[in-house]
Every structure is written in structure tokens, then in C-alpha cells.
Image (cartoon, rainbow, N blue to C red; front, top):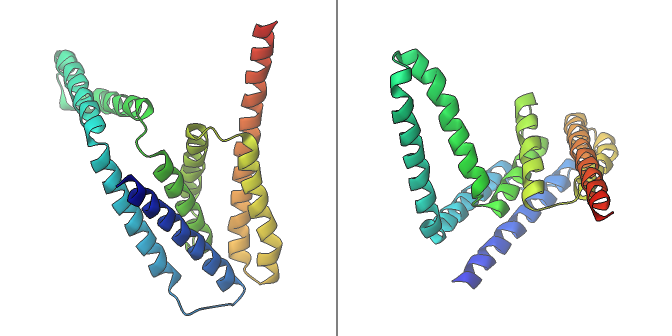
Length: 216
């Protein structure tokens, strides 16, 4: 079962690579008659199936976490109920409380590191090659998601910088092909990846300095 599951992941990764190649070829007016948007939706569906498999596989670990989260949330809500008599005051107090508990649970146990990374890459590629409009919140969300994925996978800052350089190298070829809108998006993502990479390298430098100080 584990072998089949790993093969499914490899198959999904290969489909993503094929979709990316077809999208790049289409930019240069090499079209094989495939609807890339439909192809992308199929990839999203297959990724969702993978998430279901992961949840089913790790349900024995997930269930106690969910149970403890709700018990902790219920305990804190019951304890604070008398302090906030009105409905509005309860909403104002309990919404940040529930959010903090959910975030703590997410940090304690990240279920899908690989899926989170794949979802992040899907979103970035979707924004560059499929979306016609540019949304700031979308870019900020997936930039944060990339930074979080890089932290979970312990990527060094040079990985993010390499990704930024790849997007930057794409820009002149896109401009030559008169794909100004796609080139503009690639440039934006190049900047965001370089920004994340520089921040990562600064953090790495600070950590190395602290280690050297402690060693002395």
C-alpha cells in the first residue's frame, strides 16, 4: 500500500511537470490542442484525492488532536462565558480565541507538508499562467504559504533565491513572445521569492552568529 501511495505521489508530480511544460510551450505558440485550464482542474481534483488518502492514513493521529482541540476550546469558552454576557462581546472575545487554538494545533501537527508545498506551487503557477487578473491578497497569501512551506521543509534561503531567479530568467523570453501580462506576473513572483530568500538568509546568518557566540 505504501508503494502504491508513493507511486501516486510521483504520478501527480509528473502530471504537474507535464502541465508546466505545456503551459510554457503554449506561451511560445506551440499548442497541442489541450485545454490547460481543464488539465489544471484535473490536477486539483487528484490533489484533493491525495489529501483524502492522507487523512484516512493518519486518522489515528488526527482524531486525538481534533478531540483535544475541541475539549480545550470548550473548557475555555465555558470558563469565560460568565465574563461576557452579551452576544457581541462573546463574538469579539471567542473568535480570536478559537483562531489562536486552531493556529496552535496547526503548528503542533502539520499533516501535509508535501501537499502544502504542492498546493503552494499550484497556486503560484495558476496565478502566472491561468489567472488574467492580479490580486494582491492572492500574492501575499501564497508568498506567506511558500515561506511557511520552506520553514517546514527546512529549505535554505538559496532555494527561494533560485526560484526567484528562475522566474526572473523567464521574463525576457515572455516579453520576446509578447506575453507582457505573464512576464509582469513572473517578475512579481521573482521579487517575492527573492525577498523571502533574503529574509531566510538573514535569519540563517543570525542563527549561525548565535551558535558561534555560544561555542566560544
